[in-house]
Length: 436
Image (cartoon, rainbow, N blue to C red; front, top):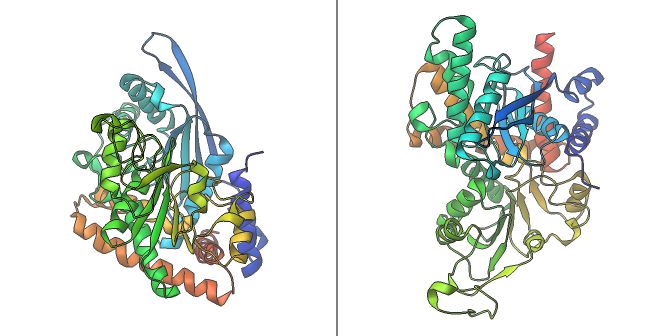
């Protein structure tokens, strides 16, 4: 039976509450979202038929600022998943100290099965349906799994049209542009947003290696989308050896290390990770003896990437990847969670026993929401920052966040996940008490 990610989130909250003796009232507030919005979005398909899509927006907590969180398009999206992700967003924003709350959205759809026109009509339909709940000071969505800057551009345009029709006046840029982040650069997007999640994670990993007195080493990355690929490239450029990467179709292992750019070029051509086009080279098999495994590399079972003997393991895919079933087999010294909720509470117990350091998602991947906040701020103030300025602002914030989490984990004699939860919950508690 699959893990319920919302139950995982609540278990993590309970662990924090016990450690700091959290007020029961605050626990109750944080254990439930403030609002759940469920929508049905009718879309005219290319065939002329109308198809109804289920959509969700969960607004977890806004004590520290407007709800903030992505919208994912995914076939298995359900309410429990979105509730968990909204909960983690509240904690994530609080860990880094940015003045935003937590929210999350999702549409149950396989976007790969939609034409460009159908995708646009679905995205605009979501923006129309949710327009009354969204806004720069209310709720600020962003891209997530299988959504991108083009989808955000469609949504912000439709939000603008919808609100102008309701209000019977033209909106100023500051009234609509900051409503969604992750937009294209030409439409108010921020430089550095495309690499922010991975970049923030690398800054955090730098600090972790210093604190743990460890050196650069080998890395395995599960998930070769934006976060996974950028993390691989940044770490490769810093001298780490990337020995394995995987996507939804295959896992590639290269004992001598791989070049992420070459793997990405292969993926763009063939739709999955790899390094060598055997057909182009006129070979039926390559050095390893198995089909299309070249340059000393080979394909391995996808689940094996989580249990390779590496220094750093980076889950950068979906929830519930490291579980009670496989945690005992994990050999990495450090886990850097670029995915949301990749480790279950039962697995955490095992990892702690094995003295594996798990850098939790609410810290490790918070670079994405932080630069989303930077975009919102730029839109609100009508500013445009250089990529260098974004990195200069992101680096100290992520590094300091790690140091604070590490300090709390030491103080309470606990792991980094609980340490991050303590930092976040204390900040949320303070904001909630100020409201009441």
